[in-house]
Image (tube, rainbow over all chains, first blue to last red; front, top):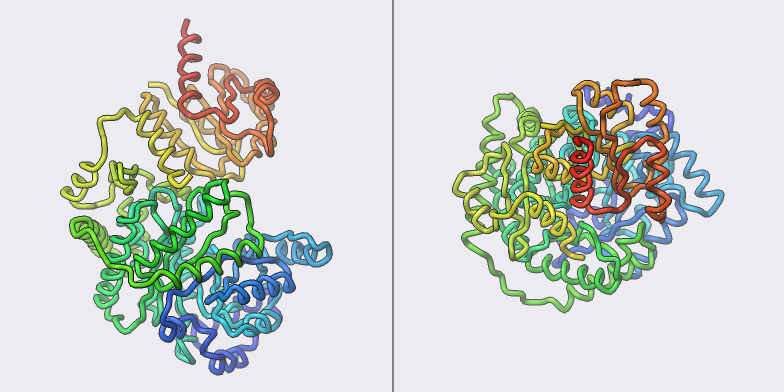
Length: 454
Length: 138
């Protein structure tokens, strides 16, 4: 028996898992309908795929949510996991699921997949014959991913960096890299049986003034870590920045450089897709404004040439949105995409050149780290501040980089910390800002810039 | 240079304001030790003693500060004179749901804080801190 299979046996002999039948699951994946694979949908559907967010604790409520989405003509269904499962606390999610079932009150903020088990969940996940995307935020997702694929969920979101730096203060980053290595291996192995399992990175990060070069570097590193384990279908992503120009430039650069680096490590045969998140920052309370903002996101996604868009709702400012609000957004987004045809493509050559140089300089510094494997190089680069995510709560992140918006709402770096962007790029970024202000006014600017869409 | 310990109390991951507090304090010439989010009261007090800080600035956004801060008096009693000259300051969104500053400020002062700011903008709060330090010098 291989070492990996030994590890799988240990993970799946968890007390919350009802005996896991490896042979049966393999047979299921081999014969699963191709429509369930988003990688197949990317290849065959000639449109931007629309995917909402959403998850409820009980089977019945989740099923009802899916029915609503299907009525709204959804392309990809979400399966958002509750926060206890994300922290591997299956005892609490079990208890809260029972309470939700008995009292009609939702005691969980998502679907506790492990407690429902793959045999039950599979009935729902295959019922609608649409691809399902696993949305979670779990540093140790080994058991969750095994259960997801066995249930018929063939897209897995996340990664060791993007699911840790925005969400945790002190979960050890090196452990996260190793747990995700397992996830990549499992996805790669199942990919050989039918259409490939798609992996998607979480580009929004902290959704607070993150400069494009940092977003792209982290997207590319997570993609490479995935491809080197044998994953054949991968989505890089980012969220609306607040500047249309910057989004278009970011889209162009990330598409080009993702292909370039995939080729560099000899994985040019993998399919790479681009995902765009509607505005992920602070939302306006006014639901009409929120609707306008969401529509604008859809237009930008079209200009960026995204393969998939992930939606928000007009209720975003006031808590977990209802299924009605969620379905409404899906229908609206589909409508807008139908009437948005023949957009001209344009770019800003100078901005694109500067951004490319920034990303390549940071990537070079990561590759030049003396460690022997890519995950260790990435780990060291975060530890030494070569990669620095603004507003990350994690203790390993340096937090030395400072960004503000210029007059046209572009995110600019005014303090690069230890991030090795070339001097000429740094000068260019600063030249766009008014740096004569004192720090107190700059802090006031940052406070204003965070809520740019309010 | 005066030393400030700052951080967000309890199970609260709201990091944005915390980062801005650090920047603003540095700009005003303080030496800042930022303990970040999810910090417990004991950790704050330990850091104050370890660095011999002049000021402890606790922030909270998720409204659960009250549950944590009731212990401040007990801790002050435990450490005795070691904390006598430390300015205890708290700011942010200090209660779950809505409350008004008229009730909240005296309540938190009673828990052992010298300066209390409920839903007050950052620079106003820091101006008040500097005023308070000036007056204490006299």
